[in-house]
Amino acid sequence: MFLLGKKSTILKSDTSQDLTCPKCNAKNTTKVSILAYYKHLIHIPFLSGGKSGTSECGKCKQQYTLSNMPANIKLAYFELKETTKTPIWFFSGLIVIKTLVLIKIFSKYF
Ligand SMILES: [Zn+2]
Image (cartoon, rainbow, N blue to C red; front, side, top):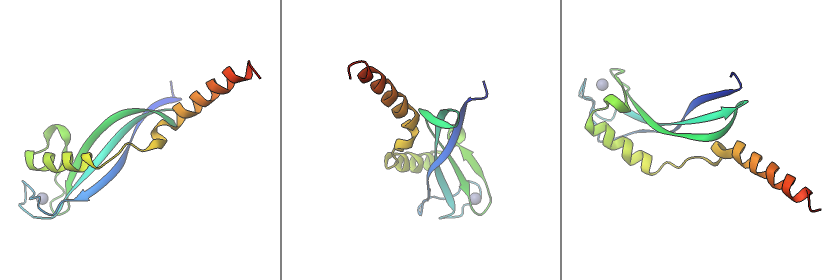
């Protein structure tokens, strides 16, 4: 259904100073990004679908995804992920639904 979908957004990006690109050996050029997936209903995010990561070297444009990421970049990814929180708007749809349900429940008594 077209109203339902899955999207991803970049939560955080960081160019790690002590990362060396495995391809061109350049230092301080690899940008690690934390990607977050969410499911949305009519473009309102309502379910968090987990996090993933990508990296890109600013010099040779070598890109990695989490599945083929070299160990040193993966380490930087996990370090960055530790400091990245899932934003509250990821659950905005869920909060709206819960509020609506609560209003419906309370409207029976008042
Ligand atoms: Zn490179």
